[in-house]
Length: 340
Image (cartoon, rainbow, N blue to C red; front, side, top):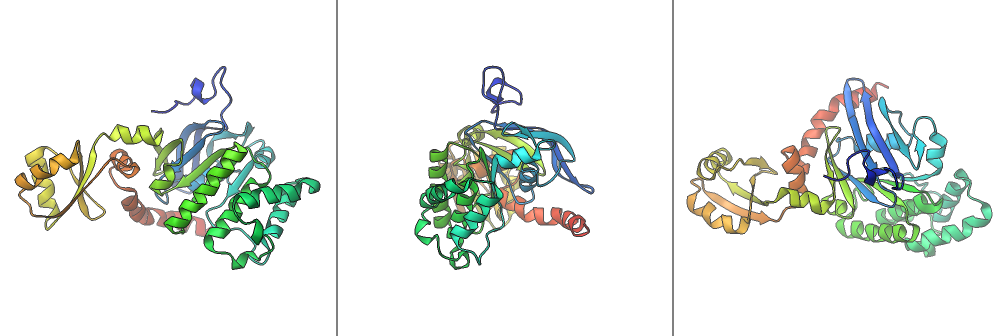
C-alpha cells in the first residue's frame, strides 16, 4: 500500500525530492522504545498524517524531525536538510504548531507574531504585510491589538497556526492541532488550515488521534507502539477493510463471542464495551444474527468501514481502547523522563 521507501513516487529519478525522508528512525528513552526504526517519505505539497493513540510515538517522531530531539538511531531529511548535521537549515524551513500552547498571553496577537518574526529574521519591511496576510487568513486581523489571554481556545489555536505560517516555511508540522477543542471549533480550524495551505502551497505533516481529522490527509500512516502499521490514502485504507462493523450489546459477551464463532465462523472481540466484528453487507447480516445467535442481544449497530475500523483491522483494537491501555504502558516512560 502507498509508496514504498525509495520508489519513484518517493523521490526517485525524474521525480521531485520528498519534503520529508525518514529511514530507520528510532528513539529510545532508557529501556522504552518510543519510536522503533520507522521508514516513510512525505511528498512535496502533500498533507500527510500520523494517526494513532496517545503514546503511539507520534510526538516523539515530530520532535526528531523538527530537531527538538536527537534520534537514537537512523536519520531523516526535512526540506532537503539533514536533521542531525543541518539542524539550523531544517529549522529555517519548517513551521511548528506544538500540541501544548506556546503563546505569550500577556502580549497582543500582533506582538506575538512580531516576536516570531524577529526570531526567524524576517526583514522588517516585510513583517507588516506578511502579518496582515496570515491574520486575515485566520480571521484575526481585527483582534491583532488584543491580548492573547482574552482569546478563546479556538482563537489561540488559529493564532498559533498563523504564526507557524508567518515565515513562509516549506513544511508545517501540526502536532495534534485541535486537541481539546469542541467539534465545531475543530471544523473551523481545519477550514483555516486548508485555506492557508491552498494559498501557500506548502507541505503539511500532522499528528492526530481524531478520525475525522485524518480524513483531511492525502495519505496517513497508522502508528501504534512506536511502529508504522500501514500507510496509504484514507480511501484505500477503508477499502482494504472491505467489511462493515457490527457492534452488539449482550448480557454475556463471552457467550456471544463463542456463539458467533460456532454459528457463523466469526472471530469477534470486545471493543468500547461491546462485542465487535466485521462482516460484508452488515445490514443484511443483522436478521440472521437475531435468528441464530443464542445469546440475548440488547442492541445492535452497523457502520460502514471507517478509519477506526482500519485501525482495529490492523492492530486488533480500537483507537479509544488503545489510548486507555497506553496510560499503563507509558508509566515506566514517565518515570524515566521524570528522572532526567
